[in-house]
Every structure is written in C-alpha cells, then in structure tokens.
Length: 188
Image 1 (tube, rainbow, N blue to C red):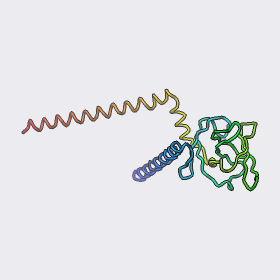
Image 2 (image 1 turned 30 degrees about the vertical axis):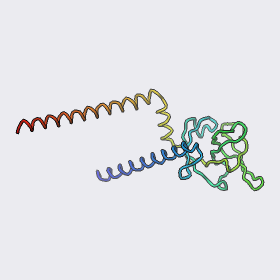
Image 3 (image 1 turned 90 degrees about the vertical axis):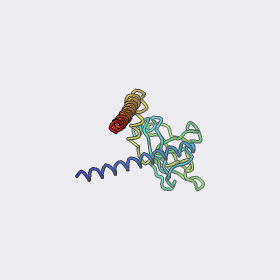
Image 4 (image 1 turned 180 degrees about the horizontal axis):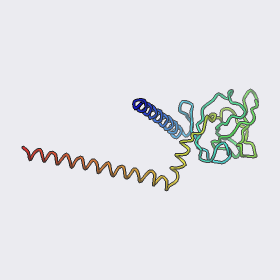
C-alpha cells in the first residue's frame, strides 16, 4: 500500500510540474510576442470585465485553443482582437451569436452574455481561438496572491522563516563539523 501511495504521489507531482511548465511557457510565449504567438495553439487570458458574467467572473483565467474558423459554431465563446468601435485595440472574449458569409468569407457576430448590445462584426482572422475552460486553480491562486496581506502573510513570511531556519541548520552543521574536527585533532 505504501509503495502504491508513493508511486501515485510521484505521478501527481509530475503532472503538476508539467501543468505548471505548460502554463508558464504559454504565458511567456504570449508576453514575449505581445500576444501574437501561441504555444502549441494554446493561449491564456485573464477576464478583465463583467461582460460574460455569470459564465466568467472578473479575474477568471481562461484557456484558449486555436480552432479552424469553419469549426466555430454559434454558442462558442471566442477570443478575438477588436479592430473597430469600442472594441478597437482590445482582446475580447464573447459568445458567437450569429455566423454569416460575405464574399466567401465568414463573418461572426459576438456579444457578451451580460451585455445588451452586440459587438461590431468580426472576421475569422481576428479570432485567436475558442475558450476550452476556466483554469479554476490558477484563477484562485492569482486572486489570493493579488491581495497584498495574503501575499505577505502566506508568501513572504513563510519563505523568510524557511530561509532563516535553513541558514541556522546549515550553521549548526558547520559548527558540529568544526567541533568534531577539533575533537579528532585533540585525540591524536
């Protein structure tokens, strides 16, 4: 039983490390490229407004996956780069409410589910991808760590105490080693 628990724990550790590595590489890829590039077709964004409440709350972190525009359907939540109207220059995540075709090109009508007004229409080349899921654990961590008091009491103080005791433990080992060396010299 102990061996199974140990193996399960090691597997869980590896999965968590891979998830952290994936999220980190995705975020760095986006930051370095100013959101121009994705990592293996994935992007991560943080919800900044309440336009998609109750589905996504302000501060939620969402995972986006690139998708062929012919596979996007009404009801999908897409993230796109706004080029006109109030959306110009913004990265927006809203729900597709209608898809039409103009001159052989797909045109998407989107709207925030909490909004009364529709967004300006967008073309497929503006779409970064479709929302796969909310990253609940990442959202919770960011929410907690963005609170200064929580960050200080749950991050800075424990880390400082850990470093302090590591240094003390190291000094005790050095002291013991020195005393043992002196004792051995005295015996000779």
